[in-house]
Amino acid sequence: MPIITGGQVMPGNGVPVQAFTKAGALAANDFAGQCAVGSLAINTSAGVLYICTATNGTTTSTWVTVGSQT
Image 1 (cartoon, one colour):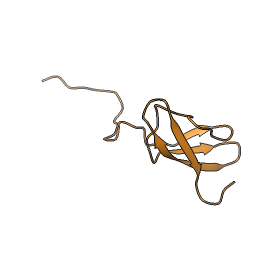
Image 2: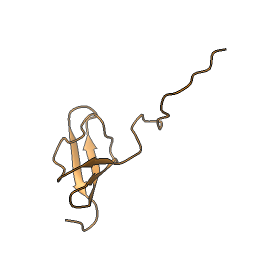
Image 3: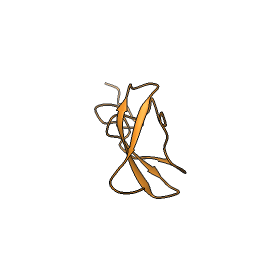
Image 4: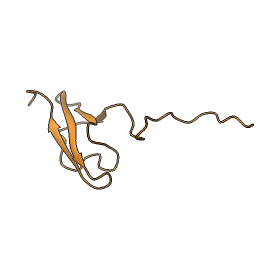
């Protein structure tokens, strides 16, 4: 039986587990098609953490600041 080597192990939903990063504030639809509800993103310019609260899985995503960071 052949052995499969290489590749990347993905979680059950196929979404990468690391946070997305962007220099600057996140806007609607950033990372659309790549994120799932609960995905995290970091504004690397200001150190602000965001969470995805809604997505249709392909073209839209909604991001909300986590905690009192502004």
